[in-house]
Image 1 (cartoon, helix red, strand yellow):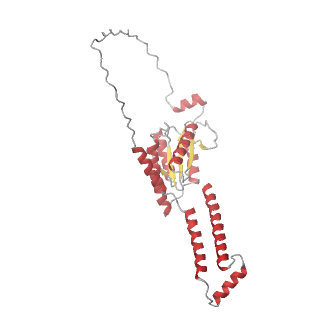
Image 2 (cartoon, rainbow, N blue to C red; image 1 turned 60 degrees about the horizontal axis):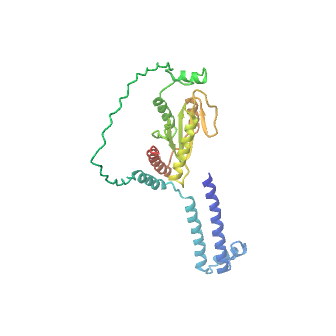
Length: 297
């Protein structure tokens, strides 16, 4: 939205500059005032009577129109294809390896007489008794009950692979492209998906909400360093089945997968058409490069 307002303001500045420049030129060259209706009436009368008008007059107006249109093109042209350039820079950065130069070690001549080796001390072995095994709960629902009280999750407990498959199906059915879950500073989300208009979704199930926020902050830093001229909209969500979190200002909180499914179905991704498909392909390749790049940070 910020870039949109910037483009509008630049367009107004461009149109004002072209109009004032053209008015100044026609006034000093032909004595023609763009803002005077009588001058326009006189021009139409000359054209109606086939009276010759200086060709430079028409060329000046045509040149001003061309400058205006070309300026609008420069302001509103799509700049998403710069992703290819940034992607290549990231790949080159990954290939650079630093090999430190080994310092030269001076040769020291040892004396002929060597000290006698001292006998090694024998350390007595101490038998430490093994502690007893703790009786830990085997089910995650028991852990949640022990920590948060008698709270039952709204959905049956599944392993992360099953959760990931369910989330992947929800987002795929709503025009999003699901990517491989990256490792971001030691944290692996349950979903990592992208859509048109540079949208990115990252979400997890039953985890510390601060881990999601730190991951979004890290991704924002990487996007800013590698793609400063394009803004990527990052959306985070947490499925909190144990109801530890009620709401958050930056992360969307759901208490079961059905709530998430309903929200995404009401806010699906836009299906790409024409040039949007080309931009989405470039965006997808850029995200794949970032996934490989960020795991080394």
